[in-house]
Length: 322
Image 1 (cartoon, rainbow, N blue to C red):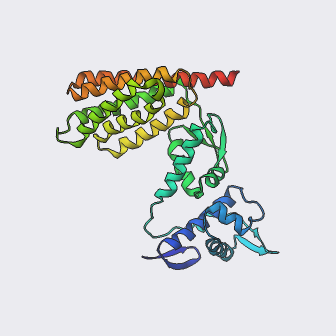
Image 2: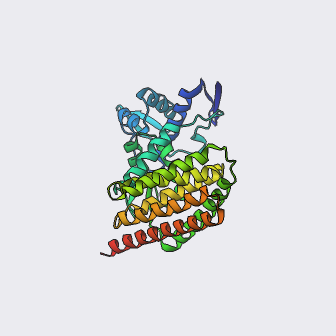
Image 3: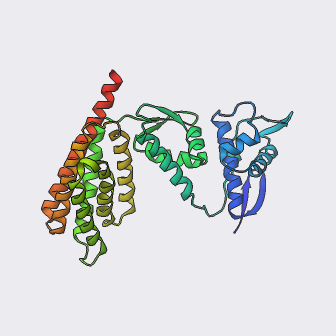
């Protein structure tokens, strides 16, 4: 696939496919570094730029040549001096097919959630796109796209110059969060109950029932395994809705919940024992085709989860006071 890059300087280059796309993304990334003030007076070395942008030095050299051509930078004593701030017209906009960056997105998603789970990042902490980019081994554009999805729901806040803050939620936020979650999951439950009996998900639900019974029998020793079953049950229910928008919302809600839930490890055994029983009640009534009771049990389970989240929020606030 060929494409042409056109800006105020005329036709810049004609290229083929993914390599050229990568060069344009790298140019834009360096422009963003300059605009945000992360680079002042001089650019860092080509080795450092390659590391920051997660690209090869060859790609960096192509990007620097473009910046020289449009007089953003000039070479001075083997260094690149910044001459001016980028303007909107300097940004490269390609007429092209955008290739997905699934692996990069998965990398930042996995890393970001892991630092939450390991309590390396907590509500109120400030972090930068550059820190996440280097730690996760992805480019800054992917990091920014990933963070923006959470900022729309006030989970994190954009400060300035690539800095972000993890926001502490309050009880009002928790109430509204679970109000939405209940609407979505009750709808998904209704969709599941309407599935034809030959649908393979009925067998999957029976298997989940057996797995929950096994966990209940060994819960004192294996209670940490509940989180995996919790994810399987809710994912199975939501699959019946066959709605990617619902899937995205539930994923977001799950992340928000775990951001704060991870900070309250007290009574985890007791909470998981209760949750296993609640799951069994939900599944049993689904398999018995008793939609009213299954719905009632699901709402009860979500109410328990809401109370857990609120307790965690209160615990965080108490620790801040102390």
